[in-house]
Amino acid sequence: MFGGEMSLDPRTSVRYEYAKLSSATREVASALRYTRGQALIHGGESFFELDISGHKYRVSGRNKTFKLPDSVDLSLY
Image 1: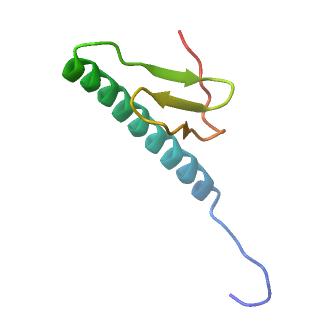
Image 2 (image 1 turned 90 degrees about the vertical axis):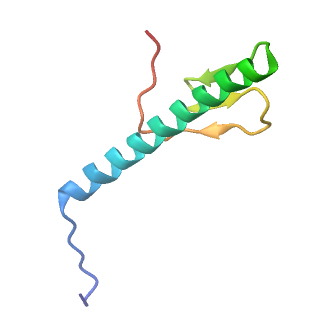
């Protein structure tokens, strides 16, 4: 399409947000499994630290902080 005009299907942004949510869910589930596995392997404590306001998390044994999408609403029950 030429002329600088672009039309997007409104469902595209919904699909994109759903994909980000699904990806974040898989990443957190994987991090929780990793943390549990480390505790079992080492016979000690491991931690999963969730920073709700910062939309990020860390797990013991890794020096990296993992970022979650800002569009994901985080809360604890």
